[in-house]
Length: 259
Image (tube, rainbow, N blue to C red; front, side, top):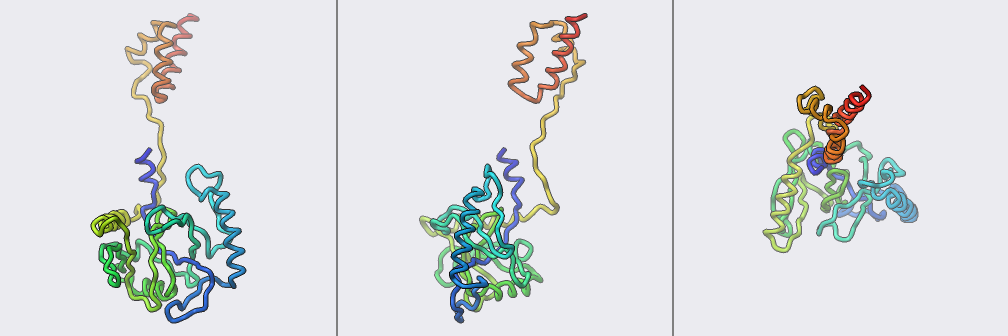
């Protein structure tokens, strides 16, 4: 079950801009992504949180997946961790107005201490020939907080400066700098796996029985008759993969009795 859960993960990641309460733009925060006033934002957020809670955050076992009421913004579940604090969900841009999105095809993860604070961090830099795309994405979201999103969850936040460069660092927390660097390394390793090269669907398949009903042991069980039935039933209860074989053998026993 753990293997199936791991293989079913997308393996991909992307960056999404947080949508805060609308604010007056400044050189440090030149972009306010909400296309309205504070009252409309508050009304939308309250309604969206109700939808989000009703869907159980869209997680496993939820009655229905959360569907945002707008195509451009919506809530995303936040993965528990020291970087996220007490947040359980965050409002993010689901698609950029300019049609720009960046992810594992555009960025490579690495390790580097934050250049401003000197704290351990996960470091994302553009891949070859992706600099222009990454620069345009950062310019469109200058001054906003970006979230690293993977497998449907927001993992880590980082604030873009008003005049961003070509890289972004996600500061990591830990009991010690060494622990923080270990956490950053674990995130970098996870993100470096990338997506499967083609769409993959993972599901558990029933294991076929490798025993033929005509096998000598099976024929002996049929000849044994009703006395073998309790043992056959116990076998099917222990391993459902044997259920079809057991049913055939029971039919054989019944046919033998009627003959």
